[in-house]
Length: 342
Image 1 (cartoon, rainbow, N blue to C red):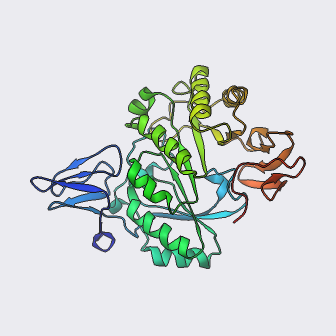
Image 2 (cartoon, rainbow, N blue to C red):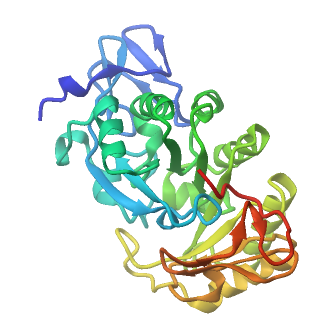
Image 3 (cartoon, helix red, strand yellow):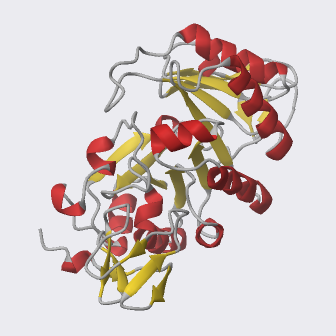
């Protein structure tokens, strides 16, 4: 595939001697020699200038329910036009989209969708939200940023589903054009990030604290994987960290793991483990803790943190009932944190 059409100069990098560059987009801080690529596989150094190879070149597009991301406190029941390019700055052994994240742009079937064409199609499909998702949006930053800017001008909302592994400056710039963020917090231990994701924990925690500081709406997902990040002590440490650094009202989703990619040797997460994680965090004072990937479980519903009445009844990605009125509980009038209307 000829990638020239989809090549643009990268936004965050610095030039080094001998036609070497250093990427400053994510904490990997790759140093790249001439005619070499960064860790993510979709950025290339050409004679001392760093380029993205996936501008306007997504390999996956689909219309999803916003609940699939998952967002439970952001425009429930709405649909999002979702997209991704090839590449990622992690190698998670449990990745459910590994065919996208661990591929190079030459290896995927791609669409010719520059920002202008993409926004036109989104509006034609009558979607109100663009979701940058599936793979890791950080590695198609330039494409995402320009699409966010254009989408906002056209009255569309922008949301990102990310591992949060991004440096502070590019994240802060992006947040000017985002409406909501979902961060996959893979674990609360450095060991997990190093051994299972080939990454580090601290930058992700810093991203979460930055989102809080900027006043962004965001939600956190923690995929519970048997034997790897499912200890009671870890759930407690996670809950304490979130309460102390992000507050009690940030939605936290404990999702069920299913054997995938390089972790097919492990069983699905027992539902009892998810319930244990949820109960620990609720007892610590978190108000909105959910169970994911268990359709029909009461833990996927939203309850008022004041009167405990059922507000949003869900079955998987479907909203069966919504009792939130103008951002408040229909029954007691308590304001419910989130974004409830366009």
